[in-house]
Each structure stands twice: as C-alpha cells, then as structure tokens.
Image (cartoon, rainbow, N blue to C red; front, top):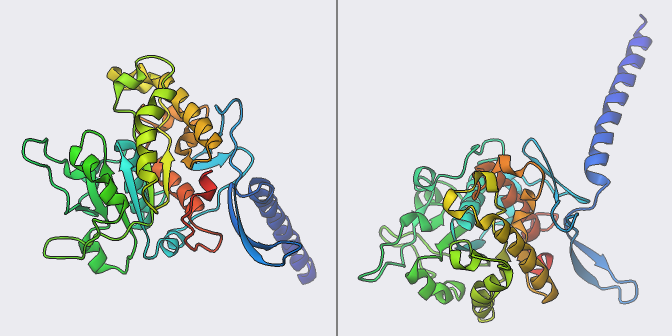
Length: 352
C-alpha cells in the first residue's frame, strides 16, 4: 500500500470516528435544550443587557415519568443538564454558603454536595445510602452554637454540622461551606431557625470552634417524620398547612433565597415496614405541593424527579437514595445555582 493510501485510509477512519462521536454528542446533548439556562441577551428595542433564566425540565405521564438512568447518568425527558466538574462546582461556590434545613433526606443530599465539593465524584461515590456515622466527622464539624437545653434530648451531632471541617479548610483553599440543620424532632433548631435564616449565628473561628459563614441560599424539606399527616389521603393539603406554611412564615422574614425541596419518592417493596403505608401518600403529596407552589409562584425544587423512572427502586433503600444518586442531585442543584460560566447566581428564578 502506498504512503498516500495509508494517509487516506487513516483520514477516513478518523473522519468516521469523529462523525460517530459528534453524532453521539448531538443526539444526547445538543439536540436538547439545557434543563436550566442562564444567559445574557439583548432586547430588540431597548438594546440593554438582561439575564434570562429558564427551567425546561418537564416530566411526562401526569408527572410520573421524568427520565431514565443509564448507569450513573441521569437522562431527563426533553432536556439535559450541564456536566459539572469538581472545579466548576468549587468556582461557583467560592465564598458561598448553602444551608439545608429538614430531615435525613436533605441531610444526606447536602452532605453529598459537600462530598462532591471535596472531590468525591459520581463514579467514586458509594453504592449505598450515605453513612453519616462513618463518613461525616472526617470531613465536617459539629455546629458549635446550638446546644440542647436541660431536659431536652441531646442533639445528635450528625444532624447539626458544617462542611468542610476546620482541619480540611486549614489544609486547603476551600472557601465554600455547607451547613446542615436537622429540623424535625430537634426543638433547639426549631427555636433558632429564624436566627439561622437571618444570619445571626455567623461567627468567627475560635479555640475548638469552626467558623460559621454567612448563608447565601437555603433548602428546606420536612414532612416525612409526621405519620399523622400520612394516615389517610389526601396528604398534600395537610403537609401544606402544617409545614409549608411554617416555611413561608420564615421565608417571608428573610432576604436569603429559600427553596422548598420535594420529599424522596418511596419504593413500597423496599420501604421500612413501619412506614410502608406512606409510599403512595408521600408521592401524591409531592405532586400536590409541586402544582400548588407553582400556581402560587413559590420556589420548589423537584429533587425527587430523578426517582420518577421505571427502575427507581434499584437506587434507593425505600426512603433514602444511594450516595451516588445524591451526588448527581447535587450536580443538578448546581445547574440551578450557577450560570454557564460557573459563576454564582443563587436566586429562586429557576425554581419557579
């Protein structure tokens, strides 16, 4: 074979391979809009710069089908999320703090957001629920400013914490922070939630005390620990009256963008026996709250959308999702909070 033939053959092979690669990218990504978009543009008449933010995520089949998993990749219906590297996430979260208020579901999610910011990728995350008693205190510190009063149940140190630990911050250049407040069954946190959302607990580092930074954005999710709300249908209106109105009362008194997050989808066949009756009612409650908050123009993050898929039971213990699923959800959250250049946006517009 002549040298020209070799070059020609090589060129054809490269062209075909590149064509296949481009076809794969275009069919999976560029043929669909971003699920969350933030971009600069100009109005035709005023010629002034403005920022337009849109949420294109849209589930099908009466909100029961939102996409499918391929290995550890979430493929939503009709749109795609931007890939998020650890460096992207750290850039966006530079000098930013997220607070998470709720129960073990939001605790696990936000702990895994912190794990991702610390360098744990989706591929490296575990194939089981996050284990705070094993994984937490090598990377986080107990929250220093809240202590139980005499006669109260002692605060579980897993449930009021700050990431990263002061030790890690001393060893790195991390400037981000994730704060977790276990709202349910914790009177002292319920009593101080307005202090949290008003940034009155901000403190400097002291001997044995980590720095507590000013909060820029907060997620809120409670409800599943109240069995009386899920004793009979419909549960959604009761959750709204009992918990959403509490959130609204606090939210209306603070300038911190605060967003309601859906409860985890329940897998009835794997559900803890004592909560098995909750499965359908919690799923229906999520649907009710999503529709109602949307009508009322209130911010809602449908974190459970990645579970409305045919095989979702393989990604959960019945209540909590596997750790790598929460890392994926953390990346989706960052799509909401960061623009295309990975600058912090942090508003509520893409949650409406």
